[in-house]
Image 1 (tube, rainbow, N blue to C red):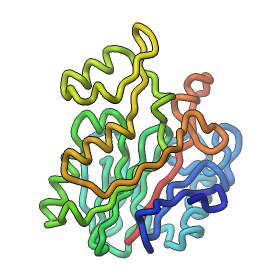
Image 2 (image 1 turned 30 degrees about the horizontal axis):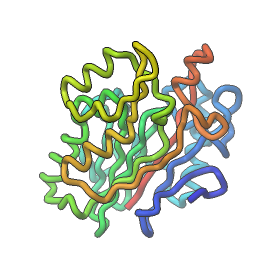
Image 3 (image 1 turned 90 degrees about the vertical axis):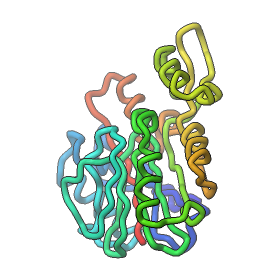
Image 4 (image 1 turned 90 degrees about the horizontal axis):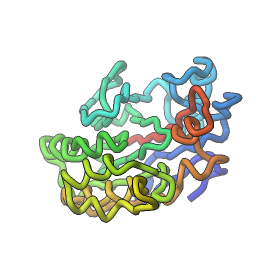
Length: 252
């Protein structure tokens, strides 16, 4: 599954151009070492442009075809059929072969979606806020309007903060459990006030509940595997003022 330790692929995506990229193989330095693709970071813009070009060269798509939303931990899903800039959203569904959709993460879960007959591809920025506020429900609503069958969609959940690293407080847990009792199975208590949360596991449950069954989950932990991935939480725990972002992309 590892391609020169620079990016990772999903075994359920056959003949589909895609990749979950690590932080390796780029030109950035310091805390952004080295494949930082996040334009909202404080890294040099020219380095970010070069890093995105490295990604496009590796996978063989035109860098100008890359569309990434201005992510803000929302539940907003947009459908596009041409390249668009300044999309304020956290999930993009592409109808065009001329578009590569991407998502930026640094602990949140990057979700790439393909269609068995290549009718659409999609990228989803899945953090706890989007998960809690129904971004997956909104994704289903959009695909239903496009007459896409659930059974034709393939979901791959990439590297994110792992269930042994994601510490949350009791209020966080209570908010989830009050909304969905079954979410309690994805919290493990480690002391009186602190729990561990399985973000990826709960996301898979919600996808199953919505009727999706073709799901693959990575087991990589962005927080724990510091040599391979950027991590927002790890950077904050180390009192750093910023952090790099990994990119995940998919194309019809």
